[in-house]
Every structure is written in structure tokens, then in C-alpha cells.
Length: 491
Image 1: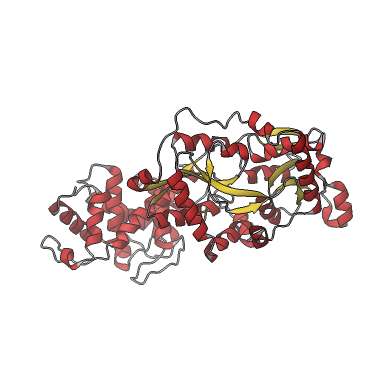
Image 2 (image 1 turned 30 degrees about the vertical axis):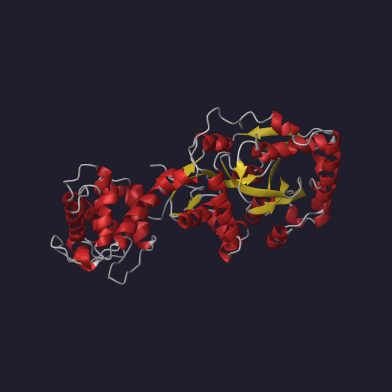
């Protein structure tokens, strides 16, 4: 009840009725038996990979499987966001691991992907059910919700009185007998409807939808009149209703259910670590701020849904995509990588200005802008063209590096802290036995060391001190964001 009170959930009388019916039917038949029969896509593989927390720590990477959806993981104004994503960032930081997001194209693939070892945990809002507990171990639950029927109000509902609207709607699950509801097969909604049919002693016709449709997309089908009904968790249905007021989500079809993440059956150490972290996080205000941001903040949801820079809408990153694409060809770079650099520099704010004097989208310095022929640094087209020209010049200066990805990283570091400081780090790396033509775990380590007197006063260093953590993080963050962009935005 603590979590129900915290999020303001309540159980109407009609839901209480369903619970009673369900309990009585459990005395007659085995509850959940239909779930077991219909798990044709959910099975334990013959060989399950073993990768517990010890192996994860040794590897240094936490691989999280999630779904591209309006609440879990998406891109908005150039920034990866989502309830699961923000929590995963904090979890990885807490464990001192690098986070790697693994996308599932089909929700039905989640359990197989986990057990095959494509990820270490499923970070998605899974309903905890008995059949699923045979496949995976669930973490502590994140919150409690219940399933509701999602349906359209009459077209002229704004002119109708409440009791007139209610007459046109399904207000009791019994009214679904002999009617049709669309849900994903093997979802908790599918199994709930199967059991509900049995509990009520009448058939609900269930039409299944492909697993590559997120719940929010199926809800939009109801809005557009493509399907009559669907079922969703109240937390998801309610936030969608704020943008689509024609929806009614007041009819419950289940009792309260726990929403959690999952790990493999043979990962008890990882389970213990994640559970301990969730326990601690749920004592922090930050946890509930994140929850409210994605499931209760109506203004943010409306703003996001309306935006053309919301990846679920148009596949755009920023207002400047056209300019970036036009000039990216000059140096042969992926325009999404340059977009990630621009976000890092200015958050796509064309009049941004740094304490050091950099200005505009790509934070061009005055002298650099003059050299590149940029007259107005706050003009997006000029700034982007000039900035990409400068990247091209740096690219040419690193022609001794054969590997293109490593070369790009040297260019990015040079763009951030200056070409000569990176050459200093390269000379240090070579002196101390590291590979001077490899950025990762080699030269990047010595760009960090240039913050310390012992190293910036070394005889091979010509340009002295640099705050090494800035280019070090700069390169890493640009590539991490680029990885998100590649997942969401077509090349």
C-alpha cells in the first residue's frame, strides 16, 4: 500500500469485484494455466550464458536490454531520455561501469536476448507474473500499477454529460464478453485477458499485434480508431490520456501488479547488487522525481509528443539537421556524429557562449572564425560550415593514424583542448610504453595525466598544463551520444 499511496493509485469498486471473481475462479481452476500454455515465444534456452556480476565488473560494461518507447528510452532534442534510461545511468555510475544499451526490436525477444547473453538485465517495465518467474529472476519492483481498458469516448463527448458518456463506454469488464480487444501476444495484457475470459465465464476475442509495437503506439491506434480497445498499465495509459483526452482509461481489468526489471536465473550476485541499489534509490527524492517526470508530468509529456525533435515522431535530431548533413560530406563523417559534437558544445543553442570566448553552435573562437571566414558566429549555417571545415583541418593533421575511428577521437580531443596538447599526450604515451596512435586506454590516459605537475613538466611536453579530464570526457560522451543517435536516427 505504501507505493499505491505514494503514486496516488486507487482501486475502484469494479476492480474489487474482479478480484473477488478471480479468487473464486482460482478455487475451481488453476490460475494462470493459460499463460503457461501460450508461452510459445518465452522459453528457457538449452544453453544459458553465465555472466554474473564478477564477469561484468571485470569487463567494465553493464549491458541493459530495453525497448524504444515513450517512457523507457527515446531521443528528445538531441538528448537520450526515459525512465529506464535515467535509472540505468545512475545504476552504472553507482557500480562504476560503462553503460551499453541493447535495443530489442520485438518485445517478445526480451527474455531470449537476456538468456542468450546479449544483455545483463532487462531494463523495461515488466509485469511480474508466475510464468515469467520461471524464465528470469525479477528485481525489487519499481512501482505498483494495475491494468486498465483503453477506449475512445464518443466523438462529441465534450458536449455530453458525464452519465451520457458513461452509457457509451465499457465501464465493467463483463461488458467485454463477445467483444474484441487488441494487445501484443505473450504480453501480460494478453494473459490477463485470457484469464479474465475464464474468470467471467465468457469469451473475450483477443486479436494480437506484433511485438515490435510499443504500448504507446497501440494506444495511438485506439485514438485513431484503428482498433476499438486495448489494455495498458494505468501509469502508461494515464499519461497518454493527458495528450489524447478522447481516451477513457477508467475501467480496470486487473488487481494491483508489480513492475520490475529482470536478470538471468544464474546471475544471483547481479540480482543482489541491483536490488540493493534499488532499495537505496527508493529512499532518495531523485527516484520519485524521475518517476514523476515520465509518468505524471503532463506538461512535459505534451511538449515532447508535439515536438518534431522527438524521435518517435519524425526521426530528427535538431533544427539544424539539414545544415549538418549538407556540410558533413566535406570530411566524410557521419552527420549524426557531428550532431553529437554540436550537442556537446552548445546543446543546439545557436547563441551559446562559453567563458573562454567560444560562440555559436560549434563554439568557434574569434581567431578561428576569422581564419575560416565565418563573419557571424551565431549564424547557424556559417557556424556549422566553419566548424566542420576546422574538423577537416584537424583530420588532415592526424594523417599518421590509419584507423579512422581512432583518428576521429584524436580530432575530437584536439577540437576540445587544442592540437598541440594532444601531441604532448601522444609523446608521453610513447615515452611510458603506450601505443601513441591509439586513443582508447593509451593516449587518453596521458591527456588525463597532463593535469599533474609530474607530467606537464616532463621534458617531452612542450605546451604544459591542460585540464585533461575535459577532453577525456568530451570524446567519450560524444561517442556515447552518437551510439544513441545511431539507434534512433536513420543515417
